[in-house]
Length: 544
Image (tube, rainbow, N blue to C red):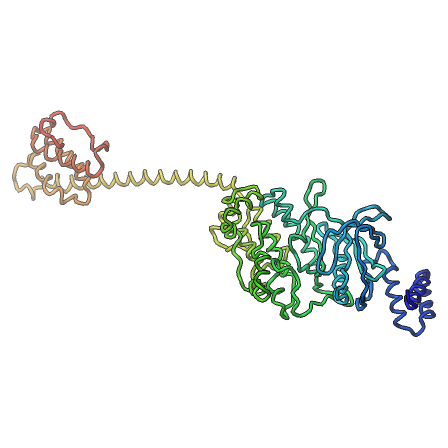
């Protein structure tokens, strides 16, 4: 330990014992004198240890410092602060996560995240500090809690989170064969957590299955959003060295990355980038894979991968399912249904909801995660989703699904009324037809039969019944060309009259024609066609 380190340690120890801020300030003034750098380093350490309850708000160390060539490694059994490392459970680009055991003041297992060795610590420590303070600002049951923070003896920062024992959300859903509805209900909790972060001014920027863990509490699955390691503050600086994204350095996971992240232009990243990633996650929960697989993207090379993320439109979830071949069976099995039923379930509503979040133009996405979650709830409640086209037929369909009982009763009443109207209309039409027929026959009797006995037509001749019947029989076909059934009715009457008079030959002509007309117009089995004839006529009427 060199002289400078000993000096800092001695001054720190004495200053830490002072009871009031004024006493500490006076001591530092005397101990450090004009050495401003020395005083700054001691004050930095004092801030890190001063108020244990404020550990999340105070910076762990100066983010301009470097770790130099220190080659310290951890492993099972290593003790860091109050924590004993048990095993490594995760590793990211800038840090390693261990399961650790805390013995005091309470005994519990925790997750301890510590910065990696051999990295550009100026930028990494700033990002690490940003994550620590981002988590400190959030308090939500679906976001992993920060419990403690500190620095190792060599100055490497770490922080301690609640240990989330479970599996990624996709693994959990498949392992438990959760239905589409159960997956959506779980996903809504994730949306609520991300919305909480957004309200605190924090964008996650790396939402993916492994950053959404699901654990069981009393048998109830609880999703936990973890790893805000590349989070970005939207309305405040997280540290004095606020997170800086280096030009031409892509941050995030390609398969879940928004087009604006892949573009790496001057376009600012806002909450809609998390909306895109959430949509990609939902796509995978529904179909078993993201729109573009990581292996596929990475195989295309850097520039082509950027182009695909920014330009290529993904297929709809239901279409993706239809192209999976035999894999559809396993995907449906994990969702406790059949491939056909799953495609039908996703088609339309869920297609629209997911594709709205995956719009390349972020202005066409939902305005917030809350709006996204609300649309999923609308789907679960059989209400029209905002993402769907506002077609009248679609809205009627949704109304029927929500109000089946009311609609069924209404349909029954309307059907009864319609049936009554139809019966009434039929009866009216038939009555009207009968009235017209009666009127036509009446006109015929008046204008043809009775008119034949008028003096101007009879011209002094003796008018007989036969004379009247012969006059009525003239040109019947032309007179009733458009009303053949009336012709048949008149001929039937004339035939019966001739039959009564004993003129069977004349009766035969009229009855035969009446029967022929009714057979053609009504069919041979119609009651009008089968009307009985007088016994006397059978001697002469032989139609068939």
